[in-house]
Length: 361
Image (cartoon, rainbow, N blue to C red; front, side, top):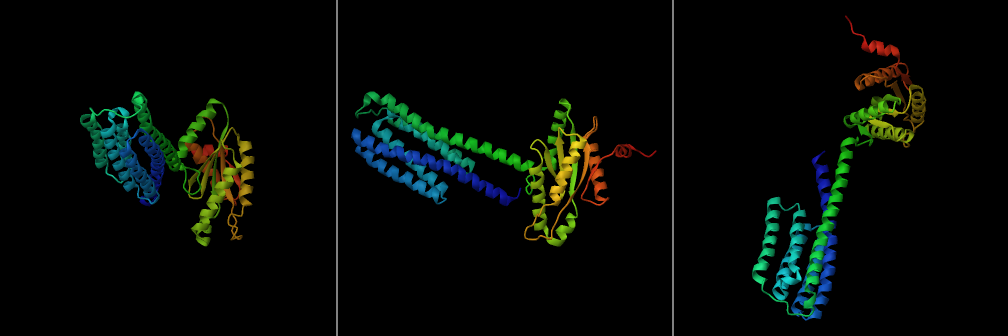
């Protein structure tokens, strides 16, 4: 994978992460709007006024994220939470539970990959130390406002509100990470141009499929296919046209064959097809129909002079035969198709078995 592709993927991941942070910010903004009303209602006017600035801070951070200034937005959020927690704890005491918001913001700092891990760790630990310090400095502050009898419920509510953004963010990041891992696995398994399985990954699929066929006592055929005169097409019309032809052939094979069959871009213009639950006779009919379908394609509508055909070599995987030998015999059958006129399908013969196993004395 090139460094350019890696940079693009990192940028995409960063966008996803800060979309999550943005949603958390909207949640926090709504909470602060409600706090303005709550603090005004209980007579904590200083806190009500402070929350006007808090709303402005969260709104500013959301705007910064939309402008791509993600790291700056996080610092705005962090500063607001620290100052707000200190002021509320100094005014209302610790029993209301506003100190727990420091836990949330300490976790959010770690999503900023622009911060070096060591520095992000130090910042997060500092916020936890501020949390601990609040108990030292404001542990004896009493709550002298209305609804003192509901303090335990207010405390629990603040714990829940502080925890929800963390849970949401980490669940979303977890799901995103799983999706990205699946995407990376698929990228490693698939050819980037045709979206078919690549040769390295396909071998394991073939062995697993072979084992299932043996266990179910079902037939399995291997077909090697090659686009005729592909080098000449590339040399004459250019590699872009060649890529278009490869994609057209790949699409035609995928559309024609069953989902339980395995289709592989074996290399260059060569394709490997594994037909499951299919004997030699049925496989031949299917591949012949596919060959005719490919020959009727108009892969480049803007250049109707270009026509394509494919040659195939087919073999039913015989008992006790290795994958290496079976592929070799399919390749020999393909070679016969190529050297007897092309655009045809050849079935591997028993004579090939003999010739393949013959060793000179």
